[in-house]
Amino acid sequence: MNIYGFPTFNLSKVLITAEELSLDYELHLLDASKGEHKSPEHLERHPLGKIPAIEYQGDYYIESNSICRLLAEENDNRLYGNSAKDHAKVNQWIDLFGFHLGRWMGVLYFEELIKSYIPNSQANPDNIAEANEFLQQQLPVFNNALEQQNFLVNDQLSIADIIAFAYCQTQHHTQLNFNDYSNIDRWYHNMSERHAVKKAMAKLPNHISPFN
Ligand SMILES: N[C@@H](CCC(=O)N[C@@H](CS)C(=O)NCC(=O)O)C(=O)O
Image (cartoon, rainbow, N blue to C red; front, side, top):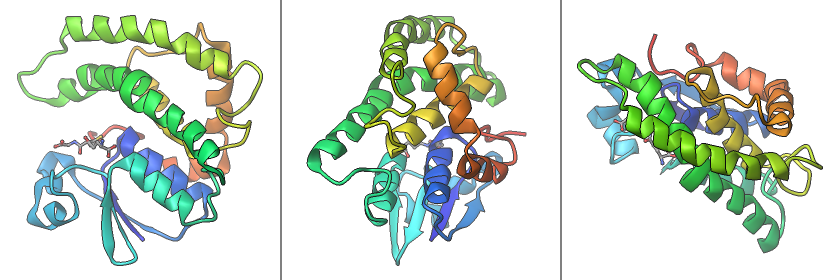
């Protein structure tokens, strides 16, 4: 398998999933500052010129969450569960992050990290305030889900934890923090200590920032 991308939380989801499943892969880091993700070569992999994309058994696949599901399903459903109900429980969390918690974490990441590297661009305080307001409403739900368990679904590691963790990694580049959320904090610490997570992150030169 070939994995293409530059360091952001969407690439980190895929790398951690691949490492947790002990898959063989080659990582091709693209240089965002040179626009390598908009090259004709990469547009063949991803028609919108975005990352991540993978080449797997002769086909290209895009969309980080779909890639994580594919890899889990191709490997005995490890990290995804075996029934439609298990899948729904995992997908609930993936969607909660994609459309809600992770969406707002992504706004902070864009406003506070990415914009600082875009010439003539400034963080928009209204967008930051809106993201913080929604996060204050939504983080307690996430924190409560981890009150009695170490993982989000059936108390077993799944791609829901990996995807949620990748969004939460944005805390290292934004004002996001989990000081008031002890269960999230414990879960985040435990996830960070996993061998697969350390191995994946060691491959990203600037952690999850596409810039030096
Ligand atoms: N929903 C997509 C998002 C892909 C995406 O927007 N990737 C960003 C980096 S995190 C990107 O490629 N940005 C560069 C661009 O849009 O030009 C996924 O999960 O893979």
